[in-house]
Length: 253
Image (tube, rainbow, N blue to C red):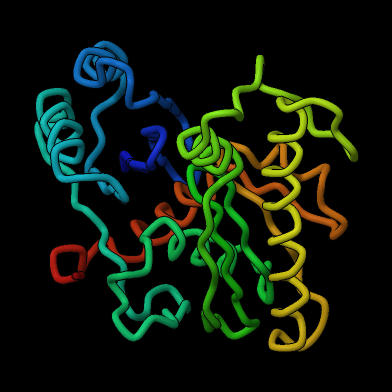
């Protein structure tokens, strides 16, 4: 049994992996009292043999989760750092560690699940896009603000743009709230479409397009391309990694 940890920009997600299946799951936003929430929840969970984590957050939050895991289960997480090559996926970055481990693990999941060649889009704090070839080569990708961060950026940089509410995505907005929401969400949708168009010839034909991240359900209806929603891609990729590196974990960078 392995406890898997996905420390994302917005949330901490975690799951117990047993015989290839997630038997227990949970998630908390970083605004929660993480130490208390984890202690309370994990008190009723079976003790895992190993703890494996992937993190895109700061060391302080990694330490807080590691301390909670140590108190609950008696051992600390092994943190996976982005490699140049693992589980059939080859990292396109000249400095492999600079690719977010969440993006790499999502590609590990896609390759293991037989979805390559594909374009992977993840919509959260950031919008990330990656192209993965049929033979597991990462061809590169793009990073942009996610729709909500885009809206926050506009509000932080302007004086007059002060919508009364969250706004609704419309084809042609007639008020500031809807105009801001529409512009930011449609901008992200257009970026996904453009990336797919640019990646398609490099992937040798029409690739599968997957969509993950906390805001995937909201962006999916705005896209012209057919997409497959893949929730928990990072945890699933982490499960593949943790299973195949069971014997050599201490030697993996």
